[in-house]
Amino acid sequence: MPNLTTRANFLANGLVPVSATTLATLTGEDLNCTVCSDALSEPVKTPCQHIFDKKCIAEWLEMPGENTCPSCREQLFSMPVAEPTNPVVNRQQQVFQAVRNAGLGVHQSLDLEMFGIPTPSDSDMTRAASGAAQYLIFARPPYMPQQVGPATVNAHILAAHVITMGNLIPALAALQNRSYSQRQQREWNVMTDRIYNLVLADFDGQNLDAMVMPAQLLMKMREYLQDVNQYGYGIDLGRDTDTLLCYLTQVSFQYRADEDRNRQQAARRAVEEARAARRQPRREGRHGSKQCAVM
Image 1 (cartoon, one colour):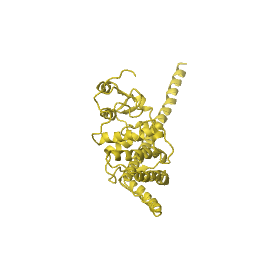
Image 2: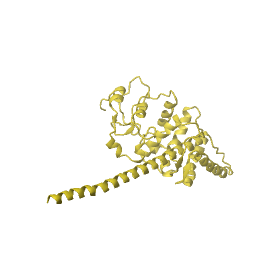
Image 3: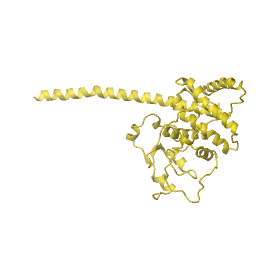
Image 4: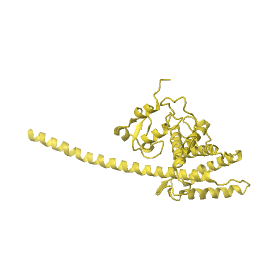
């Protein structure tokens, strides 16, 4: 392994600002920071060519025990010998420890519970893992207003997020001294499977109000549980289900916002190209007239 720089030196010199030319080539979710899931505002690039907001990647790499890229886990600088590798100090540290314990690092998809969902790509899982972690650190409690505005349900886009949060929530519960029993884990697997294969499939493609979307998804789950519990099952809805449903609402809200932004950008480009096309013949005409006058 090559000699690596220190954390302080890397944070000062190793994060390269992304040029406007490079930024203009990005589309869709690539325009969002994979750590916070918000639109890039001060984008920087790591040596492994992954792009983040400077503040987000700096906060990630300043955490004790963390010296790898959030997207590909490439080691970016040397770790001080005395620094703990698995600290659990506050909620942020606890959540990222749960991400590791759940096996949500890149290229570990074969170790995850997929809940009957087709396996997403590694890049989708990496983005979802970062988004889920940030949600668990910073989100308001479930069923307080999350976002205001429309949210578009896209089951394909949400697949990686269901898998990620479905694996992450039990791992976080264990760190909070409320580990799932075998029965609770089985019930959680059934719940998560049904959220994707029943609820999201039913709402796929619909635009919902983000303020009431969690309640709409929860109502659909309650209808399902009334059917299965009459056969002797004791599956119950709890706060972890609330968290997952509210998180899916946030992702759907952001997906709709990204769609709207992409449409606006495409419309602006079309207008600019049309203006450029109208100007081009006039310049050629003036040039041609001048040549005729000389002749």
